[in-house]
Length: 416
Image 1 (cartoon, rainbow, N blue to C red):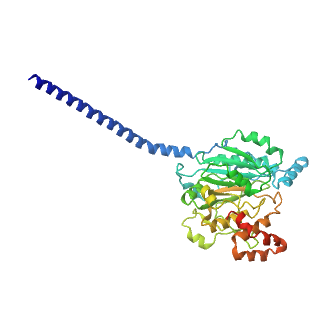
Image 2: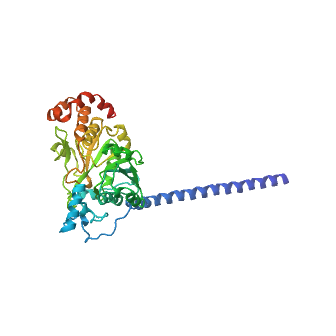
Image 3: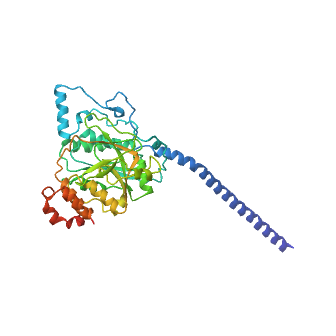
């Protein structure tokens, strides 16, 4: 009988232990489920909040001052006399841009909206977009135009998307671009400066900058630009959709003399070329208009102007980057355009990405290498059509010796 009691007590203890264990497991699972449900409920709210927060730029713009010169892209027209007029004329002669006026315009000025209204309705998942590094090469650039470019990028680019801005000094010799520039940018987040040890020219300077970047996408800008609100997201979204697309913004004109922003929200133009391999602008052909489903769809372009575009880092290297034999400036835009199309990519203009660009009165430095650069592009990419190019540019202008002696070297030097 005592044995049976002990046995019953053992069963009872085992029963209570089992009930306790089952209760604990049910409670734990219930708590875990609650946590998961709570997290799932909170996640949409967090994503929505984060998306709004993540749209914020690296730096917020300064308060709008409508009385400031050039604000909202207005033209600056000064009535100057004597010494001040002389200073203005000297600035134009030095830079082929009216830097006297530029210096009086805020580095942080705002621009008017100059895009298709439908662009404002586009929504982006900022978490899923690729990041970018912006590379800006310069040579003896004016202080205000260079820094307005930098501040424009920082104040219009979402912080989460911009890895860095890399400034590449292509062996400038002007004092304001030495210690003063280093000191100035040391106070700016995400801005880096790298200096060439000899004059490299645009192509090699850009590659020097690209070599130290960390973003998924490389975005190249000229050193006298101003970015329109929302310029970056369309470029990155398109490259996310199609990694082999090289995407250009619409290039809006900033007047070299008055700094008036002349952008417009109408249909942009696309790039072409003539048989002298000179870049030209063209209206969008009917067949391309019919291909597009919307006025804010990307536009395929035969060539690019060259200064402003975004490309996937991986695809850029797949293409072999630039032809490093290109000297100084000129012709590299057509060479890279031919390379993109003939290597399976597409070159496009995005109507929802606008960047203003100051087109100088004339080139501020020699373009003596532009013709030789065009010869390289013709030899590498144009096959039998290069004969048309040579017909338009006879040997006395292109240099027959280069054609005979260097033609076989060009593809190898171009990285092909």
